[in-house]
Length: 304
Image (cartoon, rainbow, N blue to C red; front, side, top):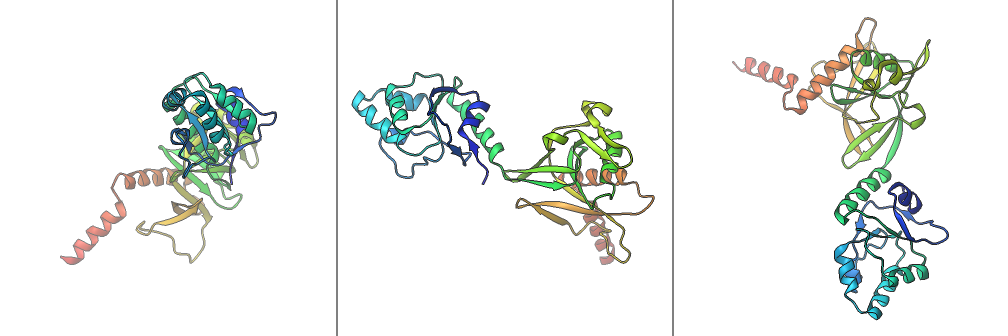
């Protein structure tokens, strides 16, 4: 299961350290956060202690209004739970009772200057990105007319050469050879592993730096995958989809993505076919399906 270390969170979000044990070894496994207002009032049923705990102006004001003895008891009660860390927003002063309880139970306390709502948005987006399920697949990811197309097929079938022709036509490369696919909510986002980002291998030529060859407009770092296109050598006798009425799908990380299979024969302009596939897919999501329109016309003609 993916996780984020508390040390990584502290570094990436530039959190101010109020108290830290000698070793910060906590791990965060949920993108949800918790504001422990009810817990500071003494209610611990269904307390999600495994989440990052965030104290904002409301919780701070309530806690500040308690007498010293109650504050000490409530702080110890809260921090006795095995939470990843406690973060106080708005650069509010940290009560001594929290610091003492943190030392006792070895819980990290951090502080951030921005407002609570903004910080919750920042940390939630950060954790969702870091904790999203990830897989790596062989293939090429390109942006064609704003549609993220993931080309797959056996090695040497011509994926990279087709992508290069698409780049020449003004489209954009995200990743060649290996694509890191991350699930975000109900979408799949593809990117290139850092070490091969913006590079492409063309057999007979070698490694190309697409960003330097064609400029920054020819590449992008990430793109949502909307369509999978499998390239395969034309197989005599195999029935290929000629009308487009039956949609094929491919599952990745539990999400179904529409898939097209394009047979390769000498003389077929693959780059142009993929451009047409992107335009046709765009039409479909906008509500127009050419195959269904033709089918309806044929049915009307037969009924006359």
